[in-house]
Image (tube, rainbow, N blue to C red; front, side, top):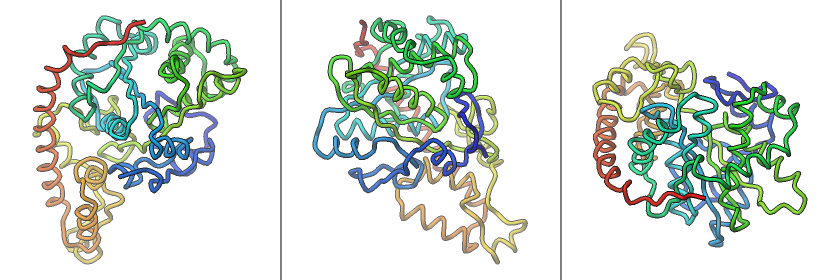
Length: 363
């Protein structure tokens, strides 16, 4: 696991030592008690660190104007469970008063991933935006835009590029090839776009691999004299590990990830092959108990499949006390995943009907 490197690979697939990475880059531990009705991901340590969380919590508690923002990278025809976690976190802040923005990073997809603007738009409209709605985003309370339609974002990307040196970019990202430079400065412009008409706090929930974009944004703001921007807050989510436990869920390792949408049979097949915390034999597991904190099936329960904390803790006890075997546990996970996937498909059908009513921002 990585944690001591001088930079974070925003395009990598490694798992990180979260404590080390937070200390290395000066990120405070997340304090769930600051937030009203913390979400499942907040309660269970999946949201593990944050920048500017006191300011964010104060904005929520005092009813101040603030925004939440995330992006869509339309480079595939399915998403994985890590994306689901970010969308659910955005939905949490939307429910707690955040003015919500979702951008389609079509320019970044073209520059860094080779996806045409036409294909990016098609994927966003036919799949990604409906999927985000199906996962809890209220489209009637959300501002959507495509980077390529937003001249303010494009103009600011060029303006902000003058606030970053080439050596700094190499230090933050590890390299400085032109497409990644353009993608990074465009992300800064996206992060700050909701402040163009009103100076206000924002929150950006991301995986820890995206922290370089957050740090660069904060540096750019701090270099502006009499800055018109408030430094945004950020929340960091742990990765959903691949089902073999070797890396984060990634499109580059399809057998180790559960994607949305998936057929229940396909998902169940992957769950039954997942790494568990079971012992070498049934007899030994009954005697010594299993190790749920090493189990990818339990990780699915914790991050995605079980909402009730008491139910989750009971499964943990059953495992540790040897009262449940891995086969039985996997079958339970299969049943829960099937119910989720069937429900997701239904919500996707309903969400696609709403997309025609979305009025995309254009500037």
